[in-house]
Image (cartoon, rainbow, N blue to C red):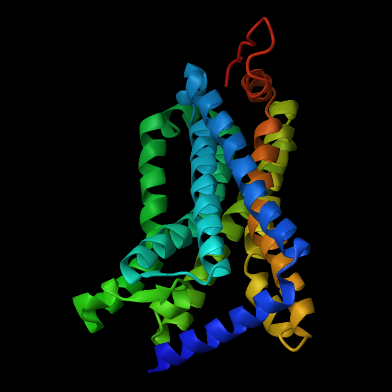
Length: 320
């Protein structure tokens, strides 16, 4: 009964939203919300092809982790856009399909900061433990670490799914639902567990990035260290910190909506749209692009493929 009432309330609010905003502004906003992720998914695919096309990229841990970032953020953008379209149309889908979409979206969301932590650790090993870097940062071990990232990221959502399997009949997954996590997993303890998981993950990642940055700064003071290499690694880890802040900004969406819920309906719709684009979509679009274009070897080869190989001479990637 509670679920039915919740869906009816959501439907009423959604109908009011459409009555307020069914005009050319609405069309432009939807077009921008769809075109932006699609374009950057295309850019990410070019980047992935660039990485795959060069053997030195395929065999170097930091480029493997970068490729994982591109793949992960592309999946996250695709699921976010799909869920956005479903929400916009107030389209009900089978709970089983909704569980799959929410599981993928949520897991890839948590993947991002964990991947940043591993990338920071890889730079720490390269600078502070250079003699062991080749032994530790192998492609095989990097693949294992990526697998561990996916397992850790899925724990929160798998526990939600197991709770549903233990308390609901199998027919639960065949019923239509307005696809949100709250509509699927409505037990009282689940929001609390969600906050605990999120806080633990982001606290862990923050500690790792701060530790690696400080360690690399201390290494920079060493007379025997390669100043240019250390400085580049330090800036890379600092960029990971900025990327982490971009990930954290996604949590502000719900806070902003709660704070501004009392605003006039049309104003609230616009603010909700802006927060969705600025805090959820754009960080996932820009973060891989900024990181990739900082690397000179990668940038030259990416530019070659992005311009449809218009250059007569294909650039050669140096030692990765």
